[in-house]
Image (cartoon, rainbow, N blue to C red):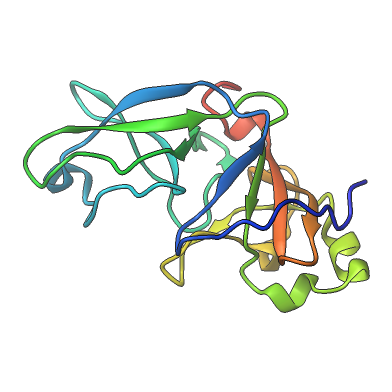
Amino acid sequence: MVIGLIYTITMFNANDLQIVKSPGTRLLFYSELRNSSGATATTKPGEPVKTGINTSDRFVILLANGDPSFTGSSSDRFVGIAAVESTESATVTGRCSVTTLRSGSMIEGRPTTSANMDTASELDALIGGSVAFDLASGAFTIDEDEVSDPGSLGLIIVGGDLLNLTMLVMVNSRASIFGQ
């Protein structure tokens, strides 16, 4: 059990998530034109992406609030974290460079409510809980408010940094593109 790991101080942008342990390969994916995907902006570095499928291309799209999950037949296929800003426009398909996940990858991010993990005992109570990402505030956070049954949400809390108020999660293989 890991509690209060201290990493070098990391500066986060508004939407930052980082793979801090065992990152996979950086791969280039299509990013669908925004008129078709419904996205309103390009994917930014540090944002999590999953696969989306249209009639002709395989592409990545942002995870939604409450992703990744894997309930019934509606499993998300979490690919990884965007490494650079995607290049699609409203009318032209683009590309998105993604640092992929692999077995053992750990993602660091801010909790949705930092007051829920600002002591060792609070963090300890969260470890092992299944959670998802939260996008309600416009920035991706790790939603420790939504600790759930491990049979539905795709992230597992494995630790955190009390000094910088960040959480560490691993991805359940059932929610990953490489685990399905």
